[in-house]
Length: 226
Image 1 (cartoon, rainbow, N blue to C red):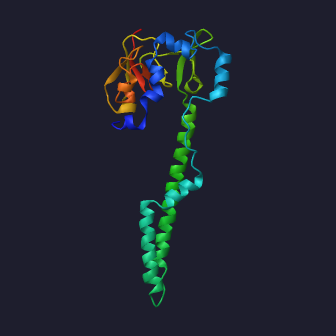
Image 2: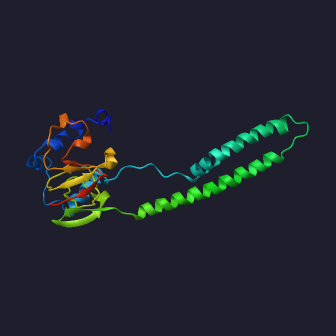
Image 3: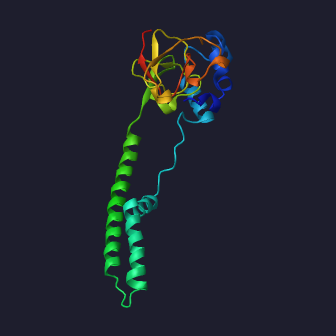
């Protein structure tokens, strides 16, 4: 992430959220330490949408078919077939289609086998993905509640423990010995300690991952003692 500072304006993206003191942050963004109630959370979902990253539309069956048809192996066979058509049909006094037919059978067989394998395996993976629902713990209606990650909204108080997946970009409000693994973000294996207050000015940071009072979506808690 050597070019992260060039790609992301750190101060513009997170400067205000990270530089404010805890009490100022709560007041500015109207955050209640007691969390949201169900009605507030539902209204925010309707307003901002679900907490999920937009994904590409699933491929249609013909996409898999075309990929199988023009696989490297089939592309070589089709190239050979073109050469044979020129030598055995176009140039020959007596056209012969035997070799071309054999290659055509190989291409069709290879395409169908690869197509059905890829198509069914990807469909199975999509169904499995739908069944796996990652959850997180927030304070809703004044009590700890386990909810799907895509139901997290602005203003939620998220409770983290060792092994927790960070469900969204979060400002740390309370912590003691909170270490987060950011390898998915930076590629570095060392865990980073997170604090309630930012240790240096956002304008002086070299990388967005250096914000030590912000936990980033997709990273995970290594240890926590609070």
